[in-house]
Picture 1 (cartoon, rainbow, N blue to C red):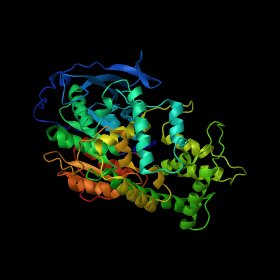
Picture 2: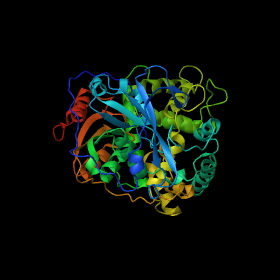
Picture 3: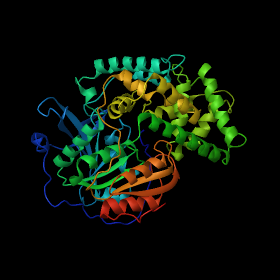
Picture 4: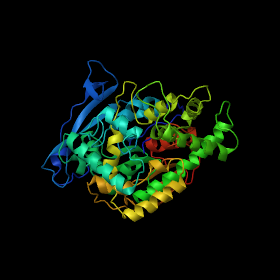
Length: 508
C-alpha cells in the first residue's frame, strides 16, 4: 500500500559526502544499447498527467528512458519510463532515487512533494529523482477503466451481494478483459513485475551517470529496493527502506498481517479521538470501535447523501475513508469531523467528509479525474509478484481468518489468490527471503504502529538482509521519514548524506 505525503520542516545540520564505487559497473550482456542510451533532460511543468516542456526554469527537469518490455528478449519491444528530477538547492552530490509505494504509486509525484516532505539537508545536497515504474502513471501504463467506471468500482456498486472466492475470480476475469482492451501496449500486463522494475531502475541509475544507487523506498518501495539489492549488489549504494514489506510472506499472510495491524491502528485512533474535544465516539475504546462498525454496517443498506448527489457514500467508500485516514495521524481530526457529519451528530447525516477522505486516498481530484493509476495498477503488479497458492476451500478458510482478525476492514482484504487466479497473468516469482549478500549497509526503518506495513515486517526484512539494520520509530501511521521526528530524520540523513549508520538498535 502506498505511503501518504505530509508537509514537514526539519533543521539539523549534516554535510553531504557522495557515495562512490571504485570502477564503472559492468553492463549486463545484451542490454548495452539501453545502458548507453543518451537522454536529454528538459525543464518541465505539469499539464494534467503529462510532463510538458516549459519555457522557464521550474526547478524540475524531465526525461523518458527506453527499457525492454521483456528482459528475456531485449531485442524486442521497448517501453518508456518517465523520470522527473528536482535539482538540489545547494551543491549536488548526486541523485537520490525515490519510490512512494503502492505498488502503483507515482515516484514523480513524490519527487514533486520532496521539497516539503524531505529534510532541507537532503534536498540541499541531492537531486531527488522520481520515476513512475513500468505500468504506472506517466510511464508506459496499465489502463483499464474510465474515471466514471473507476468511481463505480470504488463505490462497490458492481459487487455481488455476497462476495466469495468464485465471484472474485469472475470479477478479476472481467477486469482483465477491460485492461487488455484499454492498455495500449500488447503484452505489458505480463511484464510489470517488481524484478523487471528493479532492472529498469539499474538502467535509470546508469543513464543518470550514477556509479551506485542511492535510494529511499517507502512501503512497497522497500520491496523494490530489496529486490534491486539482490539483483545488483555491486551497485547498491546507500539504501533506506522505510515501512518494509516482508518478501517471504504469501499474499494471504500479507493480507492477514495488514488486517490485524489496521484493527490495532483503529483502536489507537479511537483512544486518541476519545481524549480530544468533539469526538463522536462515546464510552471506552471497545464501545468506540463498536460504534464505527455499527455505523459502517448501516451504510450497507442505506448509503448516505453527500454534496455530490450522483455519489452517495456507500459502504466501500465509507470503509476506505476510515481506513485511508489511519495512514497519517495528521488526518485523524478530519476523520473525527467526517464521522460526526456522517453519523448525524451535526443534525443531518452527511457523508461528504468521508467521501473526501476516500477520494484523497484514491488520488481522485475535485474534477472527477484521478492523478495516477494506482487503483488500476496495484493488482496487476501484485499478481505477477505473488504466485497463486491454495484452492477455493483454502481461500474461503483464509477469508474467515481475515474477517475474524479485522471485523472492521477485513472486507477490503479478501480473496487475493482468487483474484490473481481469475486475472490470469501468471507469476513466476517465488516468495522467499531476500538476503542481498555483498551490498553496502541497508537501513530499514519500522514504525511500531504502522497499519499498512506492520512493524514485524520491518524487523523481518532487516533480519533477512545480510547487511540490514533496523531503526525503530515508536509512532503511529504509515512509514516514518518525513512525518515522524528529528531523531528519525537525523538518523536517515546521516546515512544518506555521510554513510554513517545509526547506533545498532536505535529507537526514536
